Amino acid sequence: MTPHMNTRRAAALAAVAAMVVVGMQTGAANAHPNTPGDSPSVSPVSTPAFSSASARTAAIKSAQTDASSTASTLKLGGKEKLIVRDVIKDANGTVHTRYERTYDGLPVLGGDLVTHTAANGKLKSVTKATTARISVPSTTAKIKTAASARKVIWAGSGTPVLALESVKTGVQKDGTPSRKRVITDATTGKVLQSYEEIETAGVGNSQYSGKVDLTTTASGSGFELTDGDRGGHKTYDLNQGSSGTGSLVTDDDDTWGDGTGNDRQTAAVDAHYGAALTWDFYKSAFGRDGIAGDGKAAYSRVHYGNAYVNAFWDDSCFCMTYGDGADNKSALTAVDVAGHEMSHGLTASTADLNYSGESGGLNEATSDIFGTAVEFFADNATDAGDYLIGEKIDINGDGSPLRYMDEPSKDGGSADYWDSSVGNLDVHYSSGVANHFFYLLAEGSGAKTINGVDYDSPTADGSTVTGIGRDKAVQIWYKALSEYMTSTTDYADARTATEQAATDLYGADSAELEAVDAAWNGVNVK
Image 1 (spheres, helix red, strand yellow):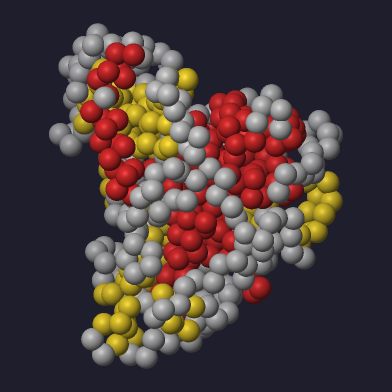
Image 2 (spheres, rainbow, N blue to C red; image 1 turned 90 degrees about the vertical axis):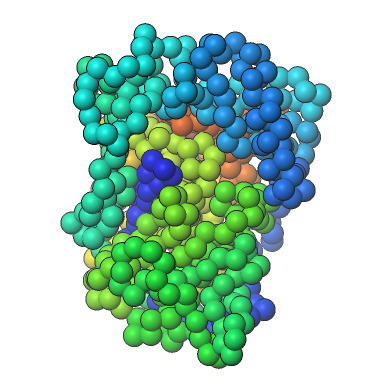
């Protein structure tokens, strides 16, 4: 499973699925989070206090009106301005406002910050992506670059500098869209950061899941895959194309697909079902209306390209895209793929973690964490929830999962524990530290069996960690992501963010906070 894309990045993950399905106009995705060790429902501990998406929009507008005053309170420089990205209000009245910064009209990459204000209006604290003062000698570039490059201030590491941000698009070897982003020092020409925004993850073929209910819409004498219960989410058939939306998937009798890749509707069924589950999980667990929290649906595209063995989330179109696999009959539309990829959109809408270094590992782990949570939430007997990433897709060709959350190194490349070199790993491997932390926090260390899968999670120091349950672990990670992490958060910062989240949710003397500390110690983040 790979990165996401906002205007800066995207995600792809190879997976395979085919599902038997019966579409029901008034039905909904079956999602019952009754799993071992957890309560029979996911209670939204940190449900935002805004009563509607319009109330959230009004809060953002109000915060933007006060942005100049906030900048003054924070003692920002005269050339700096704040742009509000999001506002979250806790049930106790605490307001968390996320800002981007500009300097002399230029975007500041790595300059984002979050203010935390008590119900009485008093500023409690500020979380900053960088503590460096934003200032550059000149905003005139000294090197030549493509006309399409934009000037920015790079504050992602070290002393802020004037930089140029450029994007080169194309197609990767396997047919995945390519979008390579490069940040260059505008004075010296040194490359400050470079990464491929859309990446592939391998090959897999699998069919699973069984019969599910879909929410569809009557249209004329037939039906279409439009989910009116979840923001109007639509599922399209690209007809092997690689751009646009293709054709909205329709049917005469509201019974969709036959459970095999021989029927083109089967891929659309799987995609529609996965999107509904992800929406329902966010709503049930966090009180969040959709990926961006604004009540607006994404859309799904199936049958991308020819023999395309991947799937990806693209925040620029706010959509999920799935290929059909090497044989054009094994669509990459598994539930955990949907939950993983769409959660890249969640990260883009919240902390917007940079997809490089340790923050990139945290970005990828966040999608693994929520993708896993969606799979458990689905409560599908054919594909029971587990802590094995991509266990149904056989991406390695030997039946083994893509990743293991209980002991990440079992995949041959992921890190079980933090050390100073972790940030140099590919983000799919550096993510192992956070995946292992989450498993320890939810389930604890040592041998155990969950939904028929055996686990035996070790710790760096041989300590014993007692889990607090997946529901609470998910709440802590979400609150940390949405309120305390920033674009440059590293593992040490993530420990601080989750400690603060656990304190907010459960108290400074709580067993949950103790478990957070024990789990981080267990992966050597101290």
